[in-house]
Image (cartoon, rainbow, N blue to C red; front, side, top):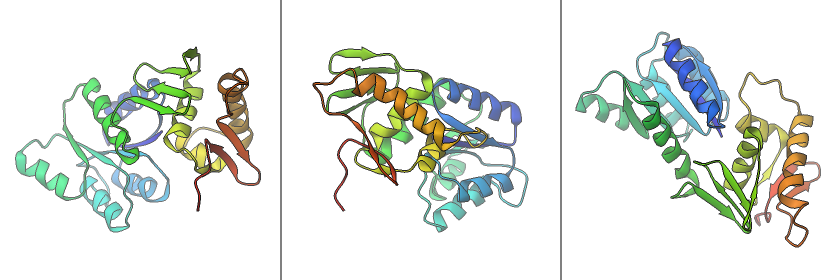
Length: 229
């Protein structure tokens, strides 16, 4: 899952980025409102963490309003030092999905991130499952049937993205946008390699079970059964 942080305090932004990357998220961080607006409106993200007061032509509220006016429905978590009831109401009315006041504990931020990322797929628990595969996104465990499968951090991130989007045809470029961060020098061959690693762990060893990852030649990959048009 790919997250954008827009925060002018670099120490805070970089600390959040490092913490989220340790949780297997792909994270981009920018440090002013203008870059935040550019990234948020031109790149695809699964969540945006947005500071409210920033330098530039756009502050956090301006970015958020612009996103909603353009019908960009990416979940937005507001970070701000403004903690009055009216401030929170203004942020939520502007289109924010959640609101966290500084200073905050990273554990609470992480819990709110998980909650917001669950919403688009209507997944009410940290456990995700599809047919014979199940993932726990808090303990980073994967099971095929009853057997635990050991995955690297990036393999887990890729498999989580697949399982959250079953039946959807996903191009390599689309996968890169959601599983790797903006600064990562990733080529389509890298996606092929990681898909191969996953197949070697969740498909090939379990020949009595149907394969979960399929290649759609000329288009990309499908996890599970392709959705009908």
